[in-house]
Image 1: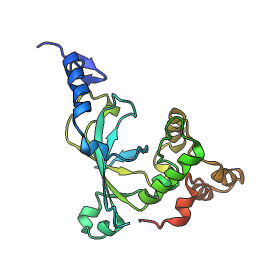
Image 2: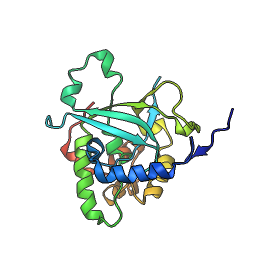
Image 3: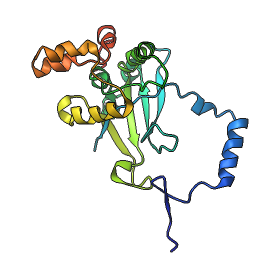
Length: 219
């Protein structure tokens, strides 16, 4: 059997010139309405698990922010009001975003050229919305295992809810360095410098202090 090459860490031939031309033409003539409704770029971590006016979000999960990123999963986010309508069996498939937001694990990467002060206002507003939502994630392509294709059954994923569940400092620190961000803003530095105990550090290490004050827990 003919050997199939790997392109962009994915099994398959490189994109042909014909496809590139078609892609350019499509971009100029088609409206791509669903992708145009993508309104926020967020970054966070997840783990495998064996405002009423905006009740549902549909999220695309990629393995990088680059143009050649692979679509590896999908997440649906719903309001607490909708979550309350689910039966007990269905609720086990959903996770809250409280820890992701308040720990600084979830961020909205700042575009090049946008002043930090301006972007922080927008990021805080986004986090105020997300912290109240519940998410349901299906992971389709395990690129972390080196898979060149989306293999096997979709994997249900959940969110981390505590610092002890993974190496928070290493994982989030590495992410911060890649994006040029810092999940511990100056607002949180005092809590760390005071030498408080671990629980106090958890409560103090909030990237988005306004979220902590203004939103209620979705637990």
